[in-house]
Amino acid sequence: MTVDPQIAALLHFLASAETTPMAEGTVEDARRGLRTLSVDLRDPAAVPGVRTVEETTVPGAEGDLPARVYRPDLDGPLPTIVLLHGGGFVIGDLDTHDLTARELANGCAAVVVSVAYRLAPEHPFPAAPDDAVEATRYVADHLDDFGADGRVAVAGDSAGGNLSAVVAQTFRDEGRPLAGQLLIYPVTDMAGSYPSHAENAEGYFLDTASMAWFQQQYTGDRTDLSDPRLSPLRGDLTGLAPAVVVVAEFDPLRDDGLAYAEALAAAGVAVEVRTFPGLIHGFVDMGRHSPAAQQAVDETCALFRQVLHG
Image (cartoon, rainbow, N blue to C red):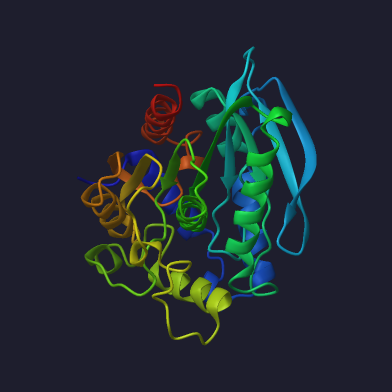
C-alpha cells in the first residue's frame, strides 16, 4: 500500500521546511522541533476535552517527577493508565503528549497519569526505566488517588513503549500484576536488525539516522544492548500482563513491534496486534491531519479499553 495521502502531504510539508536533520542538530534543536510540531502548530479548539486535568508530581528513582492526571467525563471507579511518552528517550514531555493522554483517557475510559521521566543525554540509561518503574509503583500504591478501581496499566509510544514493556516485566518479577500494557510502535530490540529498518530507513518522519542518534544520546558507548531494560524482547516474556501492540506500515520500528507481539504470544501472553496500513511513526499524534490516523487511534483505544474493561 502507499502512504496515506494526508500523511504524504504532511511529510511533504516537513521536507519543504528544510530543517536541519535531527542527527545533525543539537538536543535543544530536537526538543524544540518536536514541541513545534506537537504543541505550537496545534489548534487548541481541536483538542479533545476531558473532565479535569491536574498538574502534580510522582516519585522517580532520584526525586519527584512532573506528572499530569487526566480524568475522563465518567463517573465511578476507573482503571488507571500510567503513560510514558515517546521521543527517543531524549525529547518529549507532558505537553508534547497531551493529546495522546486525552485520547487514552476518553477512548479507554480510564484515568491517565502522564509521567515526565528524566531524559538523556543529561540523564542516560538507566535513568528512564528506573523512573518509569518507580513512578508506576507509586501510582499502583495510591490508586485511591487516581482511578480507584484497583487496576493499573501502562502505555507508551516508541521509547515510551519500550519503557512500558520494561515496567511490565519488572512488575511481573515483583509479583505485582498489571491490568494491561499498550505498546504503540515500541522500541523492543536495540541489539537487533529487522527488514523494516532498511525498508523504511528514510522519508517517513522517523529515520534510521535519527534512531542511531537517539540511541547514542541514551546509551553512550555502551556495547551490550541485549540488557532487557534496553531490549525487552531479550527478556523473559512469560506471565506478563495482556498486551495491545500497534505498529505502522511505513515505520522503521514496525518489525520491532511485530517481533515483540509474536514473542509475547509464543510465551502464552494474551496479545492483540495491529499493523495500520499507510501510516508512519508518530501517527498517534496525527489524527488532526489524517482521518486514517485518527481511525487508527480510535481502534487502538478500543482494543485497550477491551483489555481493561472486558
